[in-house]
Image 1 (cartoon, rainbow, N blue to C red):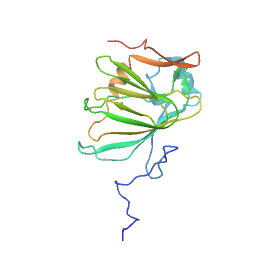
Image 2 (cartoon, one colour):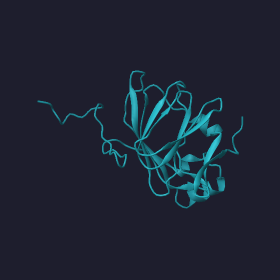
Image 3 (cartoon, rainbow, N blue to C red):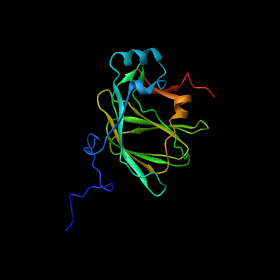
Length: 194
């Protein structure tokens, strides 16, 4: 007979509709933690001052950071905009640059923006049931383009990949996704420099 009361790192829970876990702590990113990520600084400051909304949160399921392990979890990006730019994750490269990642959309409507160090940009649409493979060497960012519903994804990547947020915080992505005539549009980032 199995001891069903034994809990360990091989069994975790997350809700397929909400992305939430009852047993794991979430890592939360309010707008104030996204300084420098949005191109409209005045809109950023005003939105932080008027309530500092939660932009996204994610669950890291606590897998060891070794090359033989698979790190995974759920990410929830909430609806909203800062100026004309949609709520998004900070975005990151992997510290081990050649490592890839997979995102599977559980709920919502969004985009995955990907960019290589050489400037190749690709944007893929995320809707429930679609998976996006992010190749190694590509920074990536989830963007929620729904006005009402959170974008919820399940992600998995090699345990040793690590996260390099600093390159994005310093440089940003070359492109932005903004709302134009009620629809998402890809435009040059006026703050990006070589």
